[in-house]
Structure formats: structure tokens, C-alpha cells
Length: 225
Image 1 (cartoon, helix red, strand yellow):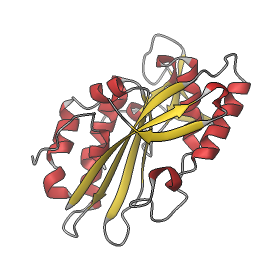
Image 2 (image 1 turned 180 degrees about the vertical axis):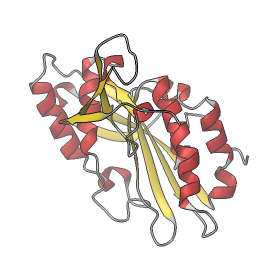
Image 3 (image 1 turned 120 degrees about the vertical axis):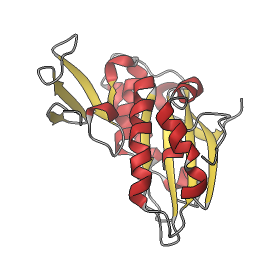
Image 4 (image 1 turned 60 degrees about the horizontal axis):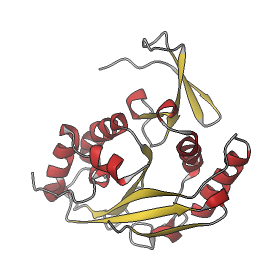
């Protein structure tokens, strides 16, 4: 799970704070500044992963409008197949619904969607019976918070292991460079170092999400440097 945050070219090595109250408004979370001092009265935060605490939320003010809209569209991401851990990535998720949502959000905004590419990381894995799934979360949560702080992390999704321990986690980044920056922190290095003894098998795929003008067409293909 945690190693899905790995950057391009990264190598896998065998190696209480108080949060403000969250008030959900549509897909955006408003965080009161009285709970934690900020430069403004409130900031727009979006839940883009299974984690709900503030360090895991996306600060929309750090993105341009196009990336904000895609992040909001990705909130509805879900698997369409039970065998997502081994099936074709594009067919495993509701990408058509996501792009439809993006098109609607764009129509209600003040921008015209221009062709843009985004970086996707896919981490396919299998855990042995000796691995406790909770141990993965202990490593994954700080790595995710660290990656969110680095910027440009638009979506993080992971499923539950099937009966054979197979699972899939995936990240959508604003750019490949954002993914690289998000993987160099201490928490991520600890998670990557634990891969060899927590997983019996793992594979990383790098994909390119291309959304064309007007969000009318899109494609997912292998990433090439």
C-alpha cells in the first residue's frame, strides 16, 4: 500500500496532534481557522484518500483551477471489478464517470479545459499470511501525509486484499516531478524499505492520463520519459 507513492526511477529496498473539526460541504471540506491558526479565516480542503485527518487533505488553494477540478472529479473514483488487483487498470475503475464529472465541473467554472497530461502510479502487490494489514497502515499514513505536504498529489486510492492477499493501490499526481518530490521524505523511505519483508510480490506501473481539449476525450497509456 505505502509503496504506491514511489516516484519514477525509485528503488525498492529491503529495509497526537489535535485536528480541527471538519464540516463537509459537497466534496469540499471547510476547516475552521480557530482550531489551527492560518493566514486566512478558512481554507478549502478536499479529502482525496481514505484518510480524513487534516494532514491527509488536499489544500485546493495550492492548485490552479484545472487541477482543482480534476481533484474534485477524482473524489468519485471507485473500482468496477472485484479483480482490480490483477485486471487491466483502465477497465478496473470508473474513468468514464470521472471524466464526465470533470466535464460538468468545467462547464460550471470560468475556464475552458485545455489538453493536459497527469502522472499515475500503480502498485500491485501480494501480502503473505504473516503480514498484518494494520502494519501496512502504520507505514502508509505518515508517508501519505508527507507526500500531501510536498504538493500536487491529486488522488490516492487503495483496495482491500483479496483471498490470495493481492491488492492494488494507485496515485494520481499533477506531474511526474510532483511524484518524485513526494517520495523523497523519511516516512516514504521507511515504507519503501519495509516492502521486502511485508510483501511477497510487488510491481510498479507508471501511466499517463491524457485529457484532451474540453475534456471530451481521454486516454490512459504507458508513461514514457
